[in-house]
Length: 285
Length: 296
Image 1 (cartoon, helix red, strand yellow):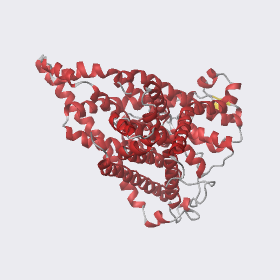
Image 2 (cartoon, chains in turn purple, brown):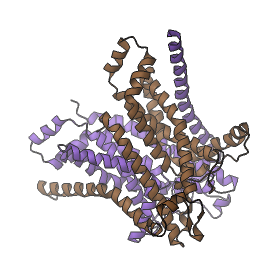
Image 3 (tube, chains in turn yellow, orange):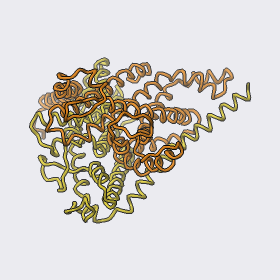
Image 4 (cartoon, chains in turn red, orange):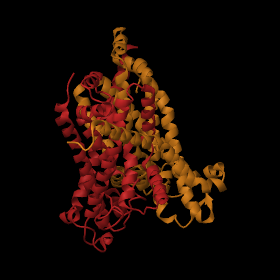
């Protein structure tokens, strides 16, 4: 009895270590294969020029249009989502703090729409676009991606804001402040690090998602210069280049994937670093 | 110093907050309403049963059978869940019960990075690693001639994509199990594994089910990565080495060409509506499982 028990535990412990190692190795393989394939095709020209004629048949040019386009789109969507998201998160935690059921209902709705696949947002964005008479454009892309990252941003901010202690609110009220002052001056300052993390998380999602911009942002070989014109994005540029039968173009797709991965890794590093730095502004109880 | 006085600023801030909240509150209804409105054209002329169970997909002839796509999605999703659930469960137990605290600090960034990698990059990885692996080793090993672009490839890529998602929830769930409960079990003479098997897993079962359900909903709607490796052949798959086609891939692949046929456009919107309903349904269901952990 005792021996089989011991054997069972040993067996499962070995198995557990295998699965844990497996996850670490998979991450390693992903990063390695993207870097190994991508580095070969990556060149300075690719990063600093837009596609020239015949780029998609293997001629010269680069993916600057997609890099700039993705950054502009993700910045726009993140700013818009921040402008809508922060007030909602603050409202939930300052104005509705005593109405637990209502707040929980809002959280529940947010969790539900967080789970909605991005392709559905893409289809909805397209419907919205047709409805208000917009062409495939940077603006349409920004609106769609904003809707897609809103629940992510609000819920991450909410998780931070709800940890702000009651005592801080009471102290602020006792000094004669009103609720919106408490929200925008005290709550935001107390939660700066968490808010930055939430914003960077949303930015990462915004820049990496392809399905939502597929029909709304369009694609172009030019740099973005107007809100009303189509814009190229990195995920789509990877996707289109991979679809090409020419090996050189496929190799460039791998290089583009490397660029996107590096951007994502930088954003993730930043969110760790910045989160730590702004911890100091927090009042500890 | 300010343009407005305190009271006015309060009013401005307050209405801004309320307005933003209204946007969020109406978003799910807008999503559903918009997609339903667009797919109405299709729902008007076909019954739901015909659309879901019919095999033939010929938009130009007016035949819209979603069965191959639904089946493709279900195969890929279930296979992915089957692969990643045991991996996540064992790893979550290892990380929370057995491993040193320090190890969790390594594991967190790993989960974050895996969750942050864009789905297109997963797709590229699938093409670089998984597809050749299946066509060169796994296929011949089972005696199947395959290009590698198959249901199995989609499922393997997808299973890696949802690992961080499921693992994260499972770790959170295991953390909510009270230490006293575990200590009481150990003090009765149980071994650590007995504690895990009989107390921890039993106590965490609803949470484990919920995490798998959330993973399922996430996997069902995943688009780009699956689209890139699954083969995109409109046919009911018979084995995991067959190429398939999933619902999200159907929407993503055909959007450019639909504007000429209104019913086709409507059909793709119906596919999006299906995805929305499935995702909302699963998320709703799973929230009841997880509600008891005082998540809110």
